[in-house]
Image (cartoon, rainbow, N blue to C red):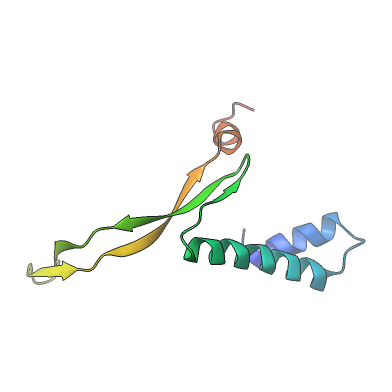
Length: 94
């Protein structure tokens, strides 16, 4: 599902809301999640999962084309851990 499909589904299920308002709400939620993660905060959506940021230390990597050693800088990467409800639904337990 892409963002526009999510907006359409929410609009269809809530005919009393204007599509532009639903779009603004969805965009605001995503922006808040992104801003929180950029600050290094953890975002938890109960039953769905938790978004966090993990730090990857710098390391020596290898260029696959030439085999040459290269230094890879430290970086921060997004991480998602599924919630129990989502895990159970995916595995047919609920």
